[in-house]
Image 1 (cartoon, rainbow, N blue to C red):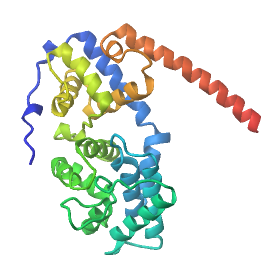
Image 2: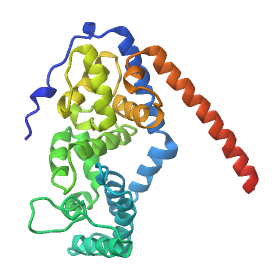
Image 3: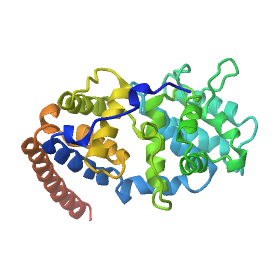
Length: 302
């Protein structure tokens, strides 16, 4: 079990300036863009259709979310899983090897490398890490369904155990494990009243989260630098201080802000209310323009 001393504790709410908490609450609301029914719910509706859709969703939508992974891997993983599993009610013993062989075949046809050392579909008996296809073979009690397995662990308060297990999949690190569990937790919350515990299991830290955590940390006296644990704890502490119900919402909202909305200095936007609201206004203008063009395209193609 990993030691997480840097994630313990926190600051008294009185130490946080109100202007910062105001920004934090606003950023958390941006998670509604990420969780929108036409995007997020659609993905999970597909994953609920059985063990194969759940495995495809995890592998293609989450396991390749590491820096430098070719976008083509998502398509290749989906195609290889679908091709091999066609007609299967449950994964066969040779399923992981067959999927990996199919992935390599499709990659070779497209002139794409396979990056075997960190590819989540790499099937090998010579390494402690396993492929995502091998992982589901161990989930017989969950009908080989990784989504069902993750939901159960979150409901039972075993998110830390789930994190440790996910880290056993080749290419899956702390960010990807937390990314998947955060989204599953939000999906499960529609049906159950649950807590994100322990909170760090639901805090993926990518470049955007780290940058925002660094800006916020400088205000509240936390040195983030390249420390994943401290960055996650900054989000957890500020979410609690700002009365944000789920720290995962703050995380998702910050990702939307950093990766999709900011066209200016990120440090200024997340630490200055006027700069934040100006950023929102600029995006409203872009949204209006795009909507207008879409209407014209629809008419032209009608």
